[in-house]
Length: 600
Image (cartoon, rainbow, N blue to C red; front, side, top):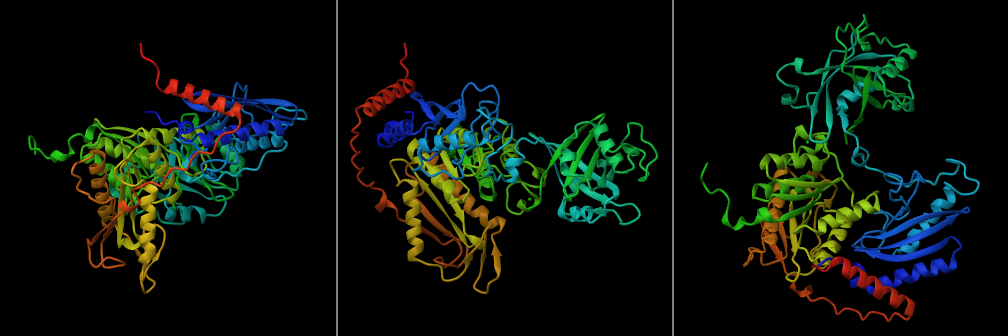
């Protein structure tokens, strides 16, 4: 049965309707508000700012109030503001987004945020002047979010970057690189830098030999220019002669960039395929030079027996299950590949991040995936396990700076999977996924790897059989309070300090053990094995003597049955307003009809 939040939470629906009604009667700018449903609840409104009317739609997602609503223009002729995702009717970027959302915020407050944007920027009202008063931006995008729509990408290791940036303005030299096509991107990896007459060729020996190939002839030729050009000038280049002209104005020898290579300072006899330009901030710009066009690439910054039954019988049926995994880092990537090797064929992967060389130490991926989004790289790996695997991906940061509409779509996609796996170890993401799993009546599995590789935890929540996820997590917190660690300080990135203050880091094996146990728990859960191999919902797994663990592989099950009984639901507060009661009844009836259409 389709989950309809306002049918299950009529008290919150009444609050939303009342808040909008109060705003309409008390403000001078909200001049129209009409509620309706189309599976989702939405409000068509008109906001007036500086004498101009802006028709908008306030769209409540299926899992409101755990997910923020979206406001988008209706029937716009052009984009109203730079604080807007997508095209002319794309959702607005407002004060309330996935990274700032609080469940107690109302749709009326989101409308107020939209009005504040229109009032300040005045895109179409009286006295309008283009870009006269732009609203301040709260954007803080991660590198993976910035590269999301960049098909061409390049990576230069820190050792080579230091050499390039150390050159004085006016220096030109040679770079050699490999180029490879992935499923979604074209990726350039720089192997060598050469400054003629000054330095020997510097080779990035951290790059595996197989990427370079058997000899240097497999590398492509490029040139670099250390300039004092402004970044803005380089960002506007679209044609090869624009690039040549800009460099010529700055007195660089560009003979090697002509179609017919002319005598040049570097002694090149062939035209380079790539051009690296360092601007006056020492940032590197890379251009692919093809005929008379150039293609600018985005920088990926540094922060790695036939006929024999081989599948256990208990895994039968896993191919028919759909798996949602959020977080494709060290643990999530291992879980995904492990589940695929156990027979899973349908995946929905969610992660916003890009795979970097330093991730190779623990991730299931390797150097061949550097520069790709993790979801795309894992999808490629999954496709190599079995050609019949079907993988959908989302590049979103569920609790970061994103479009509300995009996050709502991703959350709905997750709610349709047979199981949700949280491999992020991020409390904010856990809370969102726990709310979705509970509302959608879907099982959820999650895990954590303790700092220093000392152990970890695995847990699950099955509808009707286990306490809901947030209650189980509270049991774990209570256990930690009752058993405080006598030594060790938790750090980031799987690291911890020991009693002597030395930093110890979890290894690939440490993460693999916890991830493998989580994968087994996920299979037991999604296949609804009866009897289950796991009589408890929460397990602590020790990898060495530490904290509550007496030895390696010391497993501690933690009872959670005592919190399974839900507290009695509070009696809904009476809704006094007859107009609101009538509207709520109409909305619920309409939503029920949409969710359950009559069949002839």
